[in-house]
Image (tube, rainbow, N blue to C red; front, side, top):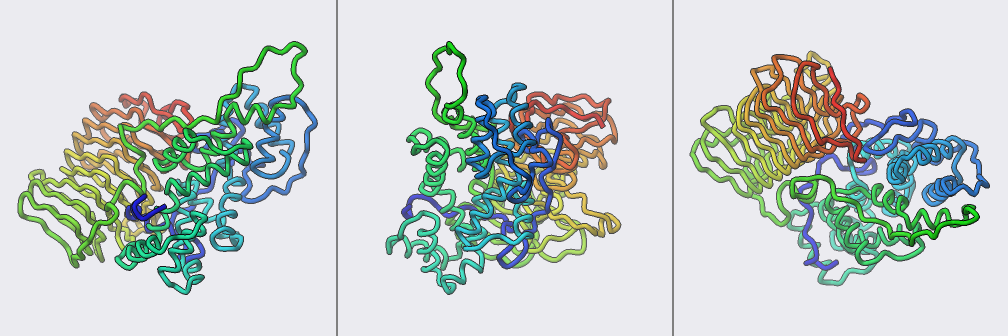
Length: 557
């Protein structure tokens, strides 16, 4: 990978620090649920409680001598992924699912998303980059973080950026870059490559962002995927497969899903079941298809928002502004600022772009960027809203007349807090909310943090966003401050919360509410609770699916 091949990743979440680095991850822990055999988890079939271990299983193993194809397939998957034979319960569970008609990809993804397999991935990353196994707390912290959406690449970036890793090169940026090439890309760097990335670091680029760029580079991902092809299919990856899988990961697919796709393929199934007893007069079998590339997630013409395509673009020079900004001149454009304070918009047609807003100390509730009047409005693009220190009084965007595109908002109570009309959030990443178990705004009870809270307003549009990481709800529509109408929630990736979208019982059914074409995860506090609303409320909730394609059923609350 040359210095011209890719750019440093956009600003990364402040919560992606590994347990071995300077601080403990602040991603709130929500473990993978050990559900019943037919439940679905994170868009795939749930792993039964007996098989959702956080480490290598210790139960008695059974090795089957059956020549049934389904049995051979499940046994092969266990041998490849866990280096062991399936236990009796696991073998029975997955063969029953497959014989009942469950798609292979659902079973495969359930296994690759399990705590046991993720523990193997995490342990392998620890050994590769830190030269040791994880401690028990560190392993559990990362499992909890992954259950809430953290990717392998983000975790490994934290390892490579950590002080533990940096100390191995005596905190020398040039030696760190050279080691990054060896450990991530498996080759030596040229002097020009070392010089380029050392200059980037000396110029203010973070180790985390540089490492994430390397880990998401085509050069690294092609090597990773090829190793899985060789292990699972006994061959190297073909050019088309390489292009499709690399692109899939770079646009939001998880490594677990890639591996699940490979072991769900006809090619893998054919290899795994080759020794099955065939009927005496079999029909000619079709040639196995190569491992398929994944179908893209439904999105409104854009990649899934995340660390590489939201926030301040790489290479942007930022000028520090200390203190709050109150904008009173119509048409003001704020570009390339690192604002160590709050922004209050008191003018029309204000634009904020390529900037970071960090807030500061406050004794009352406020947004990092706020619009409080119907005669004022703001467009914010390619920016990051994240306080230095989380606080119960700090939200991300607050008010009305706000348009946000490709904005990265995290470490706040409510990512977007709406109390008025005309709010549009597009292609943005709302994630990893701040949460306090003792919040003074809730009489010492836990925070009610939402990615989006709608208290009143009309003409509200949320499309093409990644929305996750809250405790209360991804989208909370309360009508506490007035009626809500003309709301469009479509084409988003949504997860977490007690229920992901919660329509409160106050008032009457919001007029012209449409929640359509969204993809939901299953990491909600209440099982399969993507959308909940009062029985009497009527609105369009069609074409919503979980990540495995199962249709979302609205809950009546």
